[in-house]
Image 1: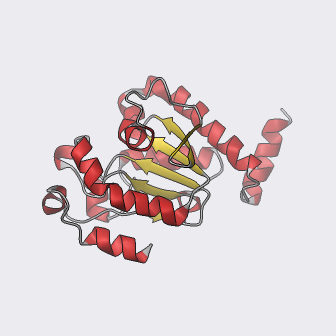
Image 2 (image 1 turned 90 degrees about the vertical axis):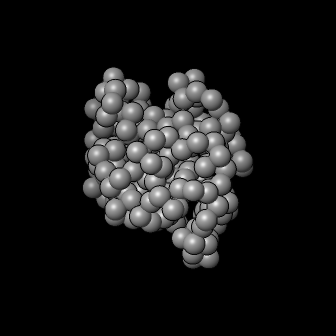
Image 3 (image 1 turned 135 degrees about the horizontal axis):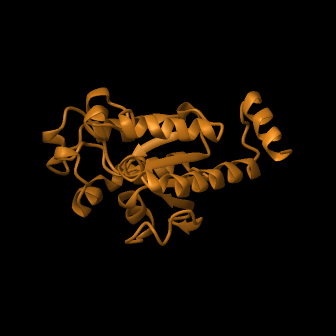
Length: 197
């Protein structure tokens, strides 16, 4: 992963690198069975050098905690590694320029489960052109089990989507349970109480 990260840090494949502060490569645990893939860094991510640290990232952290995970329990990255101007959605060309880095991450990490956060990641990994029809459904693509769901930023803009997203993340938790994921003890106790209600 070190080689891929270094190559990405020196990337000049598209114009985004010249317009951002830094390459935002990843965060979390590369040994995790769960990979979360978002769209691209925002302003705070560009400043801090980590994905999902702004308002959307804070919401993602709360969602992860609700299913018994900490952000350090999962591996987090984005389709594009450099902030698009004005936090706009990355173009298809920008996503293709960054594909070697994401493909390298997938190859090295080999996650058992991938959650695509938003349409950009969903389109890049599955080819789907809408999120509403595929969200919450496990699918096989590129040799991985992938579930698309709404991007946390979409939940901030449209809170009515939160219930559907919560249902999706409960499915993620259920799959991790099937994989015998080693949840922390306090999480196991809370899940056991929920099952006996």
